[in-house]
Length: 179
Image 1 (spheres, rainbow, N blue to C red):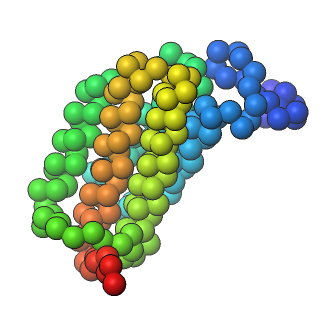
Image 2 (image 1 turned 180 degrees about the vertical axis):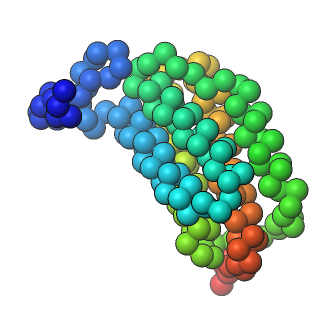
């Protein structure tokens, strides 16, 4: 089987439902962003190769993002509410090792920390796109509650991971200077 099908040569593609839509469709933007995030998390996993405990969970997140992308394309896959609870536990485990933060920090430090922040901001874009789909009634928010919550928590997880990695790497944080 060839990798190229030529079916998208005129600027359209098929959703999981078989419906053909423009490649500018907001659903494609959303699942394309989920795919982009998944790729960045793959890069992050490579950069965190010495942290095997993080790798296992990030691999799990990549699978969930793939499921989410399929769901955004119309497939019948869901993220369960238990995944929201699990990511909250993962956040709490890391935060237990961090000093409380009472200031805003800049997304900087070293390459690993900065990449955590890149993943976080792509996650926020995905969240905004999912909200836009809901507001346009393309997806119904009631059926996407766990997905919305998971994506929202994922950005929190990546922020805490950035701090956790920064402390492990002994990288000082850069505090936001409003002046």
